[in-house]
Image (tube, rainbow, N blue to C red):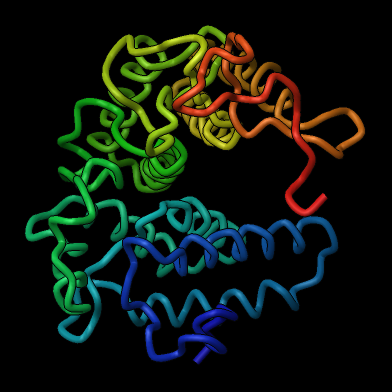
Amino acid sequence: DGYLNVHFTVVEPEKRWSNLRDQHELYCAGHLMEAAVAHLEATGRREFLDVMCRYADYIVSVFGKGRKQKRGYPGHEEIELALVKLYRATGRRSYLDLAKFFVDERGRSPHYFDREARERGEDPVRFGGHDYFQAHLPVREQETAEGHAVRACYLYAGMADVAAETGDRELLVACRRMWKNITEKRMYIHGGIGSSRFGERFTIDYDLPNEEAYAETCAAIALVFFAHRMVQMDTDRQYSDVMERALYNCIPAGVSLDGTRFFYDNYLASFPGSHRFTGQKPPVRQEWFGG
């Protein structure tokens, strides 16, 4: 049928698409789609792309507004922007339509994550708020950047892509609103976003502590993705300025010059020994896991 996920093929095949909130099936699919497009652009060969088109066609058949389709969306956004890339590479409108469906369906009530949790025999109240997944409201009604910072900016990048391809003015306005809130009230001076290590998330306006900053490297990458898409629509230098700030500060800082050590987060101050109870952030880059 085209499905491509090792874990849910080998380990838990009976649980396919049963937990979109926590399992990263659609997220992983999105990265594979991006890789396939990059492979096509680099080599001119279609083998990888053809595999991912088959997978994408299967996903199109599973998700949507049809009577037998799932009206769900990913717990970790990414596939939205990937589907637009796949649409641009192939011209298949169904990929763009699915990206738009995922964007439009997110946050609608009754919440899909609650429904699937009950189907698994779980109490949906126990997992926390929908804002962590940017699913507390439909995206066009959201006023502030909420929840997991990487998820958020992947979503906003996908929203911008969909707006660019469809001419959806309302969606573009929503993107501008998220951009304004992030860059004016929830971004560090070095371009980092997501101030709390508890949930790797946005908190409230102007909550930007230096020593406790999380400012995840991955979130900076996601912000660059968002900025890159916005500048192509609005041609405003504010997007390029933020893109450059995050790109030159938080992203190269995440890995050492020899590629053997990394910073997962990018805090602005470090006082060794000052966090006896909450855990001390290392003042130097650490070796890769398993290194």
